[in-house]
Image (cartoon, rainbow, N blue to C red; front, top):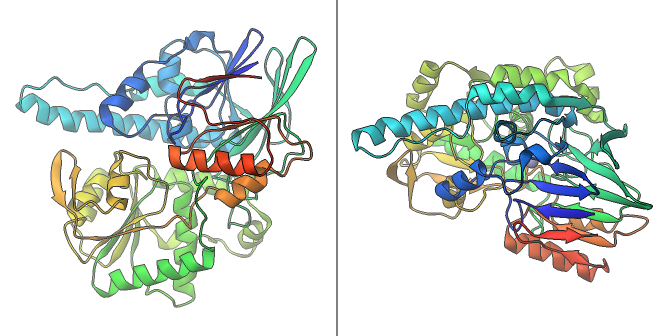
Length: 463
Ligand code: ZN
C-alpha cells in the first residue's frame, strides 16, 4: 500500500494524494495549485501520473484547492466516479463553473493587453465546457455510510466541520490478507463553531493523513475575534470607508455575515450596507439553506425560530457585471464581500484596485493566504502590490483574522491526531506550508506518535 503526495506537500494548495492498494488507485482530492503564476500553470496543466489509470476520486470538500482541477483531470482521461457528499457535489458544481468563468475572463483581460504589446496570448486552464464534461462524474454519497470506491477500498465520509458538505475520509484498504484503516482529515474544522456540526471523532486509525494549515499556530478565542471585527468595522464606518473582504460566496462568508448580523443586533457596530458581489451569490445562498443536514443543533434551532437566521435578507447580492462595476465606484461606508479569498482572481481584484490606495478603506483577510498570492502580499504589509497588471500603493488598513478560520489550530489538530483509541502507526502531515507542517510534525512526535512523516512534493510513503 502506498500514498503519494502530489501537491499540498509542505504547501497548502493543489491537494492530490494518490492512494495505491494492489492494482487499485484512488485520488484523494484534485485541487488547484494557486500562487506563483507560471509555476502553478505548469503544475495544473500536467499531471505527474496517468489520470486514466485512476479508478475514483474521493473528494473531501468543494474548496478549489481540493476540487478545482477536476476538469483538467477529466480532460486528461479520468473516467471514474468522483465520490462526494450531496452538499459538496452541489457546491462543487457552482464553484467549478465560477472558476471556469473566472479563468476565461482573466485570460481575456490579460490577452487584450498582450495583443496590444504583441505578447503571446494565454489560454484558460479550462473552460465552462470542460466543467460540464466533468460534473456528470460527481456521485453523491451519504455521510456515515460505507461505499466501495475501488477493488479492496471502502470509504466512509464523516463530517469534518470545515465548510458546508465537508468530510474527512475513513478508508478501509485490503490487500492480500492485510487490512489497514486510513483516516484522511481533508480540511479539519473547529469544535464549537457556529452553523456547522463539529468534526467527527473516528475511534481508530492505522494511518493518519492530516492537514496542518495552522499546525504551528493557535487561534485566539472567538469572542476576541468578534471584538476585533466590531472595532474594525466601526472604525472604517466612522471614516466613511469601505471594508473589502476577499472571500468566496459560500462558507466563511455565511459565518462572517452571521457574526456581523449578531454585532449589529447587539448594537456593537453601526448598521451599514453589506454587499456580496458574486455572479453566483443567490444560487450559493439557496444552496446553503437547502442542506440543513449539515447544520448543528444550535443552527437548526435558529432555523426553526427565524426565517432568516443568517441575516441574509439584509445583504444585497450583486450578480450583474454592470452592477458590480457600479459598486466598485460607490462610496463608503459599506462592507463588500467578493471572491477570490486569496485575491488570485475574480471581482475582488476590481474592488481592491479601486480601494487599496485610500487610507479610509480596509481590506479584511479572513482565510489562509497561500504563499505567492496577492492576499499573502497584502497580509505581509507590502506597501506596493500588483493588481491586474498594474502597480498600486497600499494605503488602506489591512487586517488578517485567523479567528474566523474554518481550520483547527495546532491544539485542535494535535488533539485529533492523539485522540484515537488505537494510535496510528504512521502519521503523514500534509496541507501546510513548511513552517506549519514541520511544527505539527514535531508536536505529533513529541506527543508519542510513532513514525511521523512530512513528505516533500511527489514523495511516496509505503505502509
Ligand atoms: Zn478547505
